[in-house]
Image (cartoon, rainbow, N blue to C red; front, side):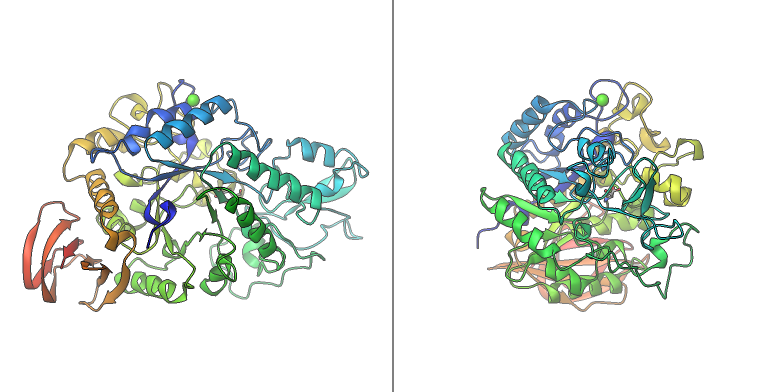
Length: 532
Ligand code: NOJ
Ligand code: CA
């Protein structure tokens, strides 16, 4: 079977503000990404060896939600560069065999998007109905009880025209009205604009939200709200059933797919936070919707241990339709750093897991050197979620500048960056780890290139194998190629018995390659790949 690049390859997420600043304003930019493409893949094993990048938004934006508030879908914010830089980025990436996936933000625009400026200008403006406007209830309160995902009600009163508008996130991010055919058409045109420019795919932001209940019914209360909810977290106190995953959504997804299928080998990835039985539906009834609905289940485990990880993978494998393809996400710009969540020792196990499972891995920039959560003083919090819902919810911690070297500002910039550089940058950076044959970065490089050359890993079958408690073993197989992956999630040595002979070709400690026969030992927090 021939695999698509988005099945074989590894997707590397770039958060452009924090990746590399090329012009000394403290904010990353497109030219910075171009300068680091060789680091990502120059064809040699000294580079990371990823096959695709997904770049978070770089569109003109007032940055109320750091680019997820788009003021123009078909241009580049001057802070990041211009369209000529973008074209060069595509060309340079493609020359290195790197595909380029961009963020598409269909649910909402910025309040400064010309469409919204028109929409809010008067009740009879032709674009009024491009957004979701409703009268107040008789007592002046919002039209329904929906809560914003960032806290507070999802309605804001507009004094000038005397109605409320809907926003699923901040009030600076009004929701588009997809039920309006003109909106639908304009947003399809956006996809076409970038496809014609040569992008290889889209990551579709909260795409499960775009269709709303036609009557905007109240959501019922959540019988089991999380115990630590902020007082203004209305969304957390409801079952969000009428503001997401409405039946009309799937028609839109099929249309996105039809459009991208007019072009050669493009991919559409959806950001959706749903349970497994709902998740499988995003492939469409016959594989005619999303290629990859993001799978965040490993981020949502109540605890990181062998049993829960295996269960999560096994359930996904069993649920996958024949036309579906799995994927795994362990980090992003929205969640605390992997190495902070599970510790540096287990972060190595996570690296081996991510890059040896069946399904497309997504790797978040900085996780390859085990970057940890940044410490953000209260007066430096920039993320609206942290400002509205409280410091414990700020996503700034996973958005601190990528640590390139030991020089000032970690080689990210020549001036104080927009978020503080983490204290550990002198020892934890790409240059230092690149020279250390046992570093996290060396482990990622080894794993990435090994996966690249192994049909069993990028394409083969998956079979879990029982092992001692606290370990997770699985077999990956393609034709005569057989690999056993053995991961120790504990701090203790574990004896594993094999019926086959084999050879350890890679340990997460990067210190052994040896033949094994019968029993072998996994050291504390060790993972190995065994060729059988
Ligand atoms: C999901 C994005 O990943 C997140 O960063 C953003 O704040 C929301 N969608 C709203 O666009
Ligand atoms: Ca810059």
